[in-house]
Structures are given as structure tokens and as C-alpha cells.
Length: 143
Image 1 (tube, rainbow, N blue to C red):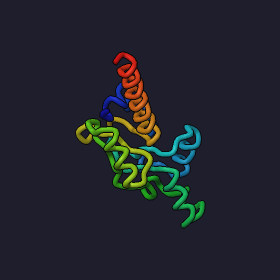
Image 2: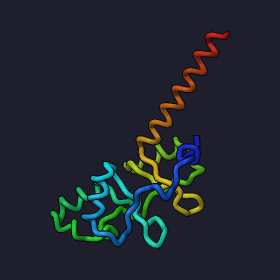
Image 3: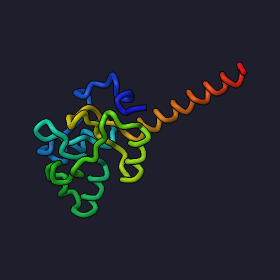
Image 4: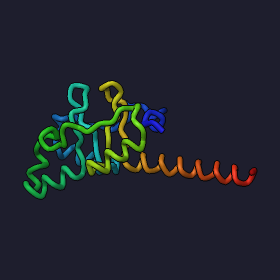
């Protein structure tokens, strides 16, 4: 299955993002309010990076609460590791495992097209395996 199928029907404008010039404190509040682990960081309409819970934890360990007064662009993970809509779910899972990340912005010829989490991809894979198992059971019963 391609990532495009996974995000079909999702409106990219519904994705919660933050701006590189936004204070970290505000981005942390968004993460908490929405109960999410990461935000794509936008700058001039393009993906500039990712701001995640890990970014906050690492900065707080080094700088204490002073990091909350910085701008997201100063603490985000950049550049963002992205995946194209045409990529396969298995490729995206492999990339996430290799890079030890849990979120991927999705692009369509460089333009922001969506955002997927490891949970989205694992659920998709489980659904696919269950569908294959059901088809195999049906085949065995009719043979």
C-alpha cells in the first residue's frame, strides 16, 4: 500500500502545525492540548523541521525551563525527514525504524501533503495482514 492511500481523504489544512518563529512554550501547549507527540514546523509555507516531545526533553535536560522561551526554529529537528506520497508503507516503516523517529511529513513533489505517525503505519500494516489472512481462509474453505 502507498502512503497516498493511507492519507486519502485527509485534508492537509486540518493537520496541526506550528511556525518556526513561534515560542516553544506555545508549541508545547499545542502538543499537550491536542495530545499529540509532534508537529510539522512550517516556514514560508514549507516544511522546515519537526518539533517533538523529544526535542523538548533534550533541551530541558540541557537548559532547563529557559528553553521554553526560545523559538521553535531554534530547538526543532531539522531538516525534516520526509516521505513522498508515492512511497510504500513498508518503506516508511523501515525509514522510521532506521532513523528512530515516530512521525513523517508526507510530501507531493516537495509540497506538504500530510503527516503520518508510526501508529498510522502499523495500523495500516495490521489491517493489510488481517485482510490477507481472511482471503487465505476463504480460499482454503472453498478449495
